[in-house]
Image (tube, rainbow, N blue to C red):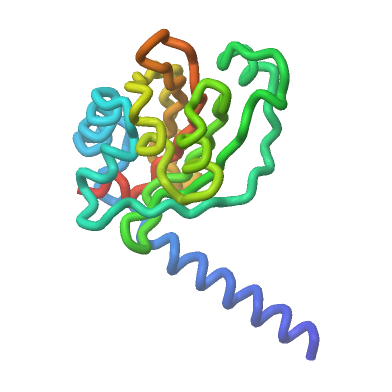
Length: 187
């Protein structure tokens, strides 16, 4: 009996996973790195400091933020990029950005609270305000570090890694790693 329940559970989970992933299938190659849709989306991201603003332009309702657990450590690479020396100088934020109930992206954000105003830090710590919206008064700019195309098997169409720099003095305020899902790019 236990074996039958376990097998039934595995089959159910496999069918459920297949059903969920079917929305991510790409028989026409729309999500290929060299497709027109991906190139256009990448150009929009490259032209804006705020990825949230790019996503918001295509979403009829306000972009929602779903906060997730933080399980990635602050590495030496992160400290170097943010130009700080101690891990306690960096706060990590992990979120999903949604349009309605549809997940558009998964984003990791390592930021330096001492380079932001107290009001900005309160927004980031106590609300679901997107990072770009919370820090927009810094007049930040985006320095692209890397764009990768992880492939269809990952469910990620494109991954951006960027440093956000404060407008007044070019100080790095945040390192972001943004994974965009097919729904963000769907024409």
